[in-house]
Each structure stands twice: as structure tokens, then as C-alpha cells.
Amino acid sequence: MEKKRGFIKEFKEASRINPFMAFAILWVSFMPSIGTLLLVPMALANSKFLMELNFSDPFTGITTILIGAALMGFALMPTTMLAAMAGFLLDWNAFIGLVLAYTIATLIAYAWGKNLSKNSGELLLERYPKAKMLLDQKKGRIGELIFFVRLSPVIPFALSNLLFSILKSGWKKLILFGTIGMLPRTTLVFYSGTLVSDIYQAIQSEGIHGKGWIFIAFFSVSLWGIWKFFNKENQNPST
Image 1 (tube, helix red, strand yellow):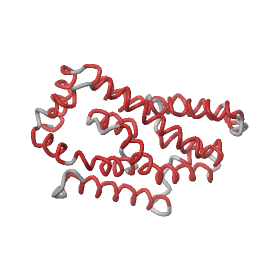
Image 2: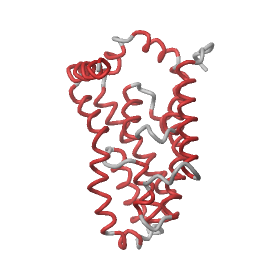
Image 3: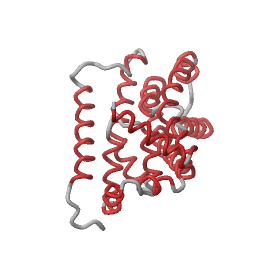
């Protein structure tokens, strides 16, 4: 119970320092789920239209990419859900577009997150000097943290974007290491969507076998990588 009160206290402090930042945290925490409830039924109701989209047409391709980027960048829909739906409705013709969309979404989310956070990160870290010192020491290896956070199937895309904007990781590193980290799980979920005949099967657990083991592997590797980032002795912080 103490931990819960502590979290609430810290959130109130963050709200006092920067109310817009607190709103952003709530937004990225809840809005993707709300967006899923609203947009998935809408997409399924118009599935025939979506399946007939011609991605060889530049206007159609660019428009679809920008819509997907906006949905993910403004945390209106989780990347995993969008990948499953794209695989189910659009097939492999849309895969490259999906990768481009979440790359653009990263830029969008990082930009608005950085604009909202301003100096909130520094103000909050000043309350935790040990954490600030650790992050300063490992600033040169932030790409490693980005990769393992993105690889994790349980850390939301929108929340991680906000986190890295607060930490000021830099958009170039976030694009490079984030895209590499997201590719494995995005490919797996997209592939699952292309195989099933029912979109709901694409987002349900299949038990601890096959793709279930792959997700566990992603989670384990990402957890190990994040742990190593924060616990490994940093003999040369500049590398």
C-alpha cells in the first residue's frame, strides 16, 4: 500500500511541476486501449474496402502510411494491434508501409513529448540524484536501452516514446535503435495477422507454444538487456 501511495504522491508532484506532462502520461497510458475499442470495430465493418486498397497507387500508399503514423504517434492505437490488423486486412503489401508508419510515429511522439516535457525530466531527476548520476554515466549507451525497451512485447510504444523524450535520448538514436528493436515483434504480430481468418484470434494467446514461446523470448531478452544496462559496471561511459 505504501508503494501505491508513493506513486500517487510522485504523480501529484509531477502534475504540480508540469500539468501538461501529467496529462500526457495519462493519455499514453489509457488512450491506446480506448482507441482500440473504437477503431477496431470500425475497421472490421469496413474490411472489404480496406482489403481492396491499391498500395501501388502513391496517393493511397502515402495516405495510409500517414494515417497509421498519426494513430500510433498520437497514441490513438497500440502498434501491436495495428500490426495485427494490417497483416489481417492488408497482407504483406502493407508491411513496408507499416514500418515507415511507426518510424514517422516515433518522430511525432518524440516531438510532442519533448515539447510537453520541457525541463520536467531534469526537475524530477533532481529529486533522485543517484538515478540522475546513473543516467548521466550511461548517456553514451542510451541506444542500447532504446533497443531492449522496443524489443519488449509488454512495454507500450507510446509510453516508451514519452519516456525517451523526457530523457532527451535524441530522435536519431530513437529512430535507429528503436526501429531495429521493434522489427522482430512487429514482424511476428504482422505475420500472425496474415495467417488467421478472424482478427480476434490474432490478438489472443495461443498457449505456451509456437509464437507464445517467441514472445516469452522477446520479453526475457529485453528484460535481461534493460537489467544489464542499469547494473553493468560502466568502465567507459563515453562508449
